[in-house]
Length: 451
Image (tube, rainbow, N blue to C red; front, side, top):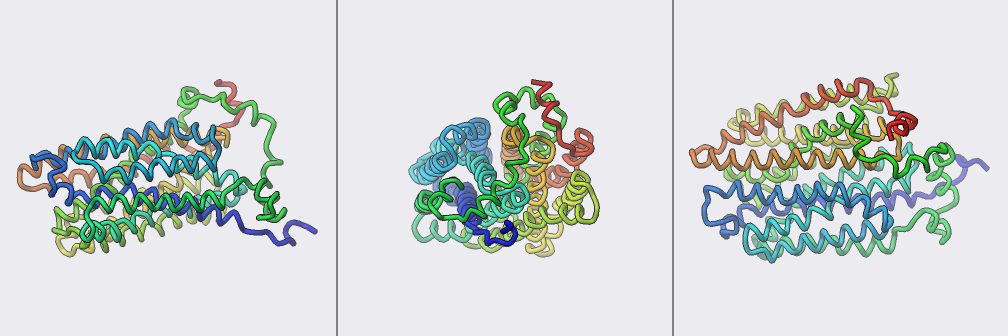
């Protein structure tokens, strides 16, 4: 009987759901401090001088970003050493403990240490997630599985403004860190019970042979150079290719926009519209609900262009150009926000959706332009670049906001940062176009010849 006529079990989607929830927890833990910023400032935990509170907060954010950037370089290799099941569990256990540890911080320095402790293990989520999808999904399903996983970032960002202010107002800000951090410990139980390799799940009867063969359908197409290339392509060699720099600069310019809204959106709503506590829940939840659909649409549009006859590189480039235009609406946020706050919220939601669509494609560009043996390394380079860009924008924003707050109008500072956010994507698209005009894959032979 042919494979197509047999029943294929769907346990791989159970695995996908586990990784989706891990990504949700990752972003839930990451966003807590931005929602607690007013409570922490009011408690004097950012220092006694309100004139430097924005810079102090920026430094705390940067502590996370530096640690996260270092983690992007190292954690993937650690996960490779321990394997997916143990490596993912270690990463999530450590970031859950670090998230709860914020509750015991007594000063800005303490929060900086806690954020650094959180950033390093949180960087393990994407390498572990991509390794999981590579183990459990054939090539034709990986982009869809990845889209589901990435949507977890938006779900985490939706849950945070619903849960965190309520916990802070009813139980205290310390419990907001403890309760959200403890959620990861519950995930670890399900991960331990449910996750194993396809080979082991086949052996114990959890999946049928048809699903196992479906998962492994691409392995017979692998070429003999697989083993020869593994471990031999260093970052230094990869940086000799313009395609690597296209990913690097694309992430460097655009990732900071997402991080800025993630960490400063509650503060913007407070400064611009006087919202605080539970009042920010609905606006922020709306923004990230919109971005969930953006990540799904981002994967669909290139597929539509391909079905209409475009080659994959041209289809992805056309889609990314479209996505790069929508963030320009951010230039009008403060103008339309004077008419009605919800116009500004909708524009931020549209810009965030465009980012998620862009992000889904820039991740896929790594696999489009590089052999699978070096995709994780290229992804790490891009992640490092994105974190570095986010650090620079965070430091600039903190200094800028302190300056204009002292002058009595912090809104001018937000206007300047919004202008940077609005132009980042079209600039990134132009640079990527110049560096990699066709988004074509580099041949293994070319990589090997450079090594």
